[in-house]
Image 1 (cartoon, rainbow, N blue to C red):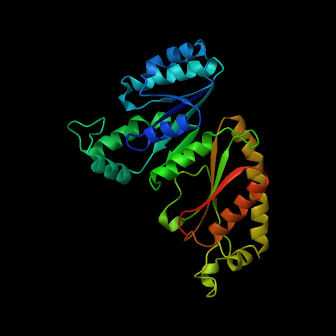
Image 2 (image 1 turned 120 degrees about the vertical axis):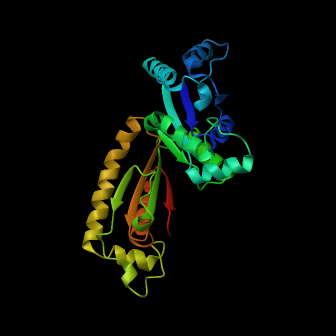
Length: 282
């Protein structure tokens, strides 16, 4: 049985994720007490029409949360079920804004401020985040974009490898891309910023790509990185990982990192992987 646990921070979009999974054929149950997970799955197995795909929404409202959940989840895996955890999160600022707009209390509200409640929940949920096979940050996602992302990740497609790869670029001066699984620092490559004709362009423009890749060290780096990522992907798939974020960082996130993210993304698409190319800072 394919079992997906949908969890994460309150207000980050768990309910929207559940609705999207229902759209692609999952039987969804939200806010199930963790202690009842194993019993619920057992009932589903022996129902008149056995369910093959189940999504369970679990969050901080479940009470005695961690002990019950982790024990039940381990029991499901030992019984041979295909189990994954999807963790939905967002920045503190984004969550505060959403709660202010909805005018609803946080589940941990009491004598704490809203921000304190969010930060307390983030600490309490850390062990689940560490166990997740997929983490989705909804900070900069609109509701429709987020729901489409979830649908795409869980649509059945036997012709595609069971992993989504995101090749991402960013600038170190604005901070590292925190959702990255693999980070490659390309600041050692010659910088187009110092070429007046290229400064206002980005790695999406052919002249910048030609300049960046016109050096031997760039070609060697790309070939070695390509070989490493190609080697790692099957192992990530074997371990049940469904999303891999490969990030390239340079100083400003506009030239060298964008070039590498574009080229790597196009290469992986040709290998029949589902690939999204993103540029955080360009």
